[in-house]
Image (cartoon, rainbow, N blue to C red; front, side, top):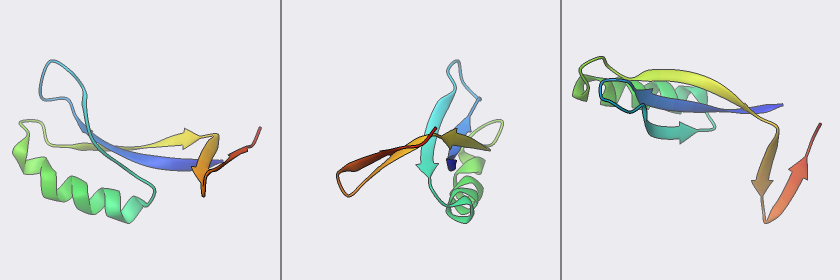
Amino acid sequence: MKQVWIVYHDSGPDNNILGVFDDEKEAYDFQELIAPQYENGALLTPFPVPWRCTDHVTELRV
C-alpha cells in the first residue's frame, strides 16, 4: 500500500494541513522550513492511501 506524508499544525482552533507529499524527505524538509511559523511547530505523519491516480488511470488495490 502506498502512503503520503502530511505536514500540518495544531496551533490554532483547526488542524490545518500545510502540505501533502509522496516523498518523506521532501515532507520533512518542508516541515523544518515551515515549523517556526507556528506556535507548536509543524507535525508530520504518514497516511496510507489504498489507491493512487496516475496518468489519468486509477489503480485500485485491496
